[in-house]
Image 1 (spheres, helix red, strand yellow):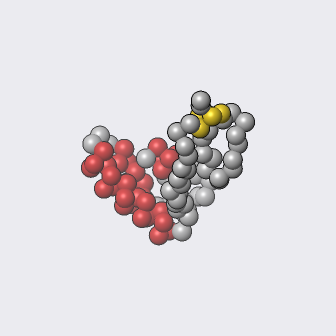
Image 2 (cartoon, one colour):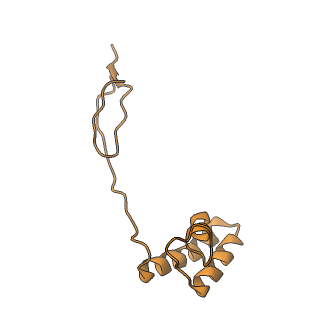
Length: 93
């Protein structure tokens, strides 16, 4: 919700797109006033749909990445772009 208030609300500091929608602004205000995450989730879904339908953003998605290795491989972490850096990795005895 913080990103929506800063980047997409009418007249907000980081609204570089110039997006302005009074209904969106009202829903952002409503979402900010809801403490319960499950109740806020309903309003956030509406806000996400509004942004997607307006064409102001392209919603990215993240694929699931998996890395299978032997338990003896220590210090290795999978990179999100599958780059393999073994400079900090070692094999346990």
